[in-house]
Length: 309
Length: 306
Image (cartoon, rainbow over all chains, first blue to last red; front, side, top):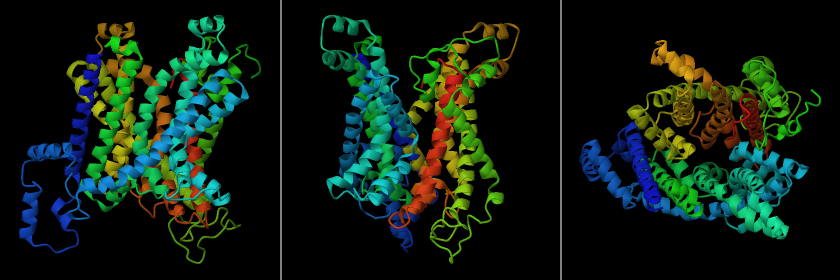
């Protein structure tokens, strides 16, 4: 187990270094001199520009710049915004993080709470209309782009029926549509996954044994079958969390939510490179860390994994 | 079609990809066999018909609509559906049907170009990694790992920020995020294929590495590639629409479905149809490519699972 964890941790560190390296190199591709971008339309004294150059370490060789960037990034220091000159990037990002975390966790919870019963029921009722009905919607949920789904929900539920507010996050009712939009894709994936592993599990000998012992159907399904069926689903939850980070761009934009995703998109539109870089590195780190946690959790839950390595 | 004597057949329609086994049929070629299986899949056939019609309509756009998707007509802004404008007009008085048709051109063209390029690059690198092994394999696969460390859409948004805005940049970025998956797919295929006797046989008769890779191994990975190509187009179209929706993809006034949804969002309250129609077009197209891809997978190799 220790070796397995070590291996996963090393992979995560490798991924983080890769992510920062790619991000840093992409920065170098950016058209225009960062100092010109900082100056923007303003007329700034060349002496001040020279001072900025030294202050930001832009006079040093690329490799040194990368190491400085890495050192600072590890301390959460992503420099200052080009657009809001002088404002630390971290400060800008911190405004969005709690907002994103709040509505996204609602979405994630919603996905899990709906997917588990759907997965179990469709497996138990395999090939009935209930199964076909839910699995058809699962396929639609997997295929439909989130912002198209958001449009349907907004037009149908908010505008035609008037049940829920369209944009923002001011009341609990505001959370429903964005959370639902976010939940659709992972929920569909998860439900399919749970259904598949349930179908496999309920044909196993130990389920037959449990039934033969005279256990009630409820106990057999919940205690014996579901527990084992949930295992493979855990990886999907890990992937879900990863996708959530990327999904925030679109969903926060369409629902006007001032979270990390919209901050990132605004920064892209303003060509505010330090903020873009900070947001990307942060999201990539979050993604890698959730993957790590999922992998380790998986190792704990499934002895076959840790023994294999 | 009628009864085929195979109890599971009728259930294939929803593509539940579970616990199904196809029996080998009479000796026919792989492609004839696959086509027969595909024809039985109603969702896949329906999707194929839809996509063919869509492609034809996109090509014939100038014939199908007298309106330009670019030129504003300020005497006819935000009109409801009418005889002249079957789906109404947008905030600049442009006909929505024209915008949707020309938008389909963008979506389909980007989808095709990106998928073809990404698969060509990915397949080539995957072939090399799997065939040569060693350092080539290590370097390429670590590169793939790095790309996998980000969610791809996040990476695309990030990359777009650093390139000059143009359709070419969008295609480049989407290829950049698109090649690792086929590379890994092909590598895995090659690893198992190169142990086969036909590869040793080719080597024994003196075929070059290039010839073995392109003439012997590649054709055997074709069915996997076709499935990935079809489903991957859906992802590319979604990604392009997503970028255009965010305002960092293909720029206005070019008609793109994502851009139309973004613009329509501003008129949600009074004119929801502006965002609704492109959403429907996008949703149906993506769904069709997914259905067709699923159907192809079942038809080409019943053992494959998502």
